[in-house]
Image (tube, rainbow, N blue to C red):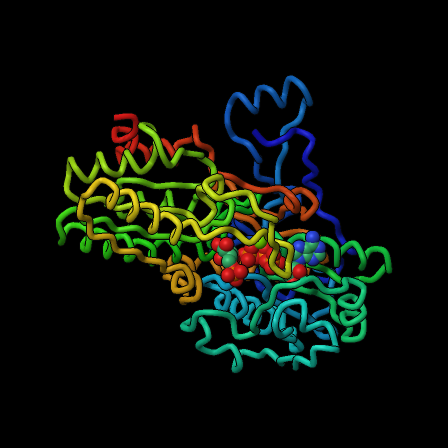
Length: 442
Ligand SMILES: Nc1ncnc2c1ncn2[C@@H]1O[C@H](COP(=O)(O)OP(=O)(O)OP(=O)(O)O)[C@@H](O)[C@H]1O
Ligand SMILES: O=P(O)(O)OC[C@H]1O[C@](O)(CO)[C@@H](O)[C@@H]1O
Ligand SMILES: [Mg+2]
């Protein structure tokens, strides 16, 4: 359940009193989509028990502002300068987002000055010496066909004050920040510093991650494409495992703290017999352990496919001093290679010949271009990000929630995480599709 006291108000820079240049007609003419009013809201939790509880305890339902074009905007397009930056790990669709933002600003709002900040937050810091790109319809032409990000990315903390100095120096009105949970935290801090300095700069976040683990975002762009490519790895592992006596295909998929990618890919390509995710701890050894279960499966069916999410099984490792990457993310122990070794050892100790094939498609998955579904999604997210910024809204991210595009305050999402619910539909479906429980404890 979502907490009832969550703040869903979106901060604004000031009154929006400029007539939007978008040519939209009212719904009554039935010709084109109308403008979205700030009063149009999407209920946060639609489950009846929640609704009853909210009405009983608060006499009110939590709702998010619906995203989309506003009739009145805050910024004068002829004077506005915008910037866009991509941070953190790569993700399919980054270039689609950049293109959508640029084309919407340029063609629909007639904003002609759009800067591309290079290599994430580093691009704001003069000491790094990164150049600034001028983004126009010409410079973003065709970029959606390429993976990665034309702007580049980086990890590592940067001085928020220096970032805001740069925004001031460049006279930026809207900053679009595309990234994961870390970027969201950085965006929130940048927006707070802007507030402190009483500047009129809007910060709009567009959540990206193949892990799909951002709080209050039901689907992040890139996830669908990642699932698509992951299914190829599963197909390959299945073919390999079936082809040889006692064949085992072991696939490691990304997912630092969440198993959404591993679980969803397993459902998309139902060849996996075991899925191991960070949210569900298992034992390695013993009658109820994973290795015994794998042996049971191989003995029964002569082959097995195992998917392991990178954050799974961290309890298998000896406690060592924790290591962090430059952004402060925990550096995980390599569960894929660890399992590969343990599986080999286990079957050797049993004098059982197995043919183990290990597949790690991690960077292939996240660095490719978006699939068609994600490209459509990115186009819609990018356009809504522009509408929100033009209306003078700030400190928000564009989210997909309950089948609608909505504005979520950074305050509400940053610092919290979305995790797969082991009692929820997704995980229960994985258990049914793999039948993995059957092999444990036998
Ligand atoms: N708490 C924080 N305060 C300020 N900046 C932060 C914070 N957390 C992360 N950042 C900055 O945001 C940028 C992106 O963060 P990070 O590398 O964690 O990637 P991310 O956005 O979480 O994406 P992903 O998780 O998908 O890789 C980095 O430059 C990082 O230093
Ligand atoms: O190798 P890197 O760039 O540190 O990133 C790895 C992490 O980034 C992600 O791909 C998210 O962007 C995670 O799935 C993964 O844990
Ligand atoms: Mg992150």
